[in-house]
Length: 130
Picture 1: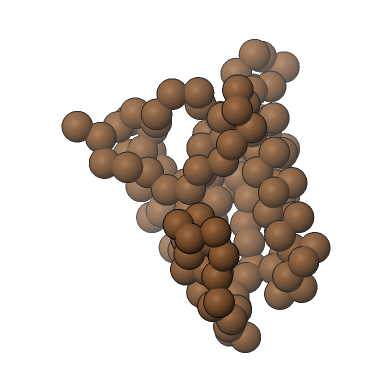
Picture 2: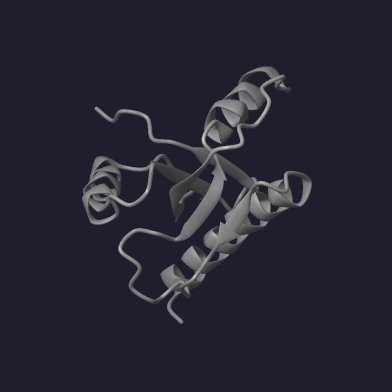
């Protein structure tokens, strides 16, 4: 396995672990990883079946440390694309993520995540690059 493939594998598994840990505490969250890191997956590293307001709850936890939002009963499918970068994601990588949305229109939401191996931290979403 190449150095980049191993780096990607570690990032995907780390984020899978984080999401799985959330699923341990929230029974309405299912984590699905149906491919290996090096298999073509059309931009779907991880799929979630989760309440439709999970991203809102997670955003509130990140910004305020906790959330009073009750998770909804209705479920959606979420596509998660993970990149293992120690620097901000560049415009080409972000554009690739956006392009993969069209290939995966069966998902209600599309989350881009960046795993930073150096500080063991995961961030969700992309900021606009100049």
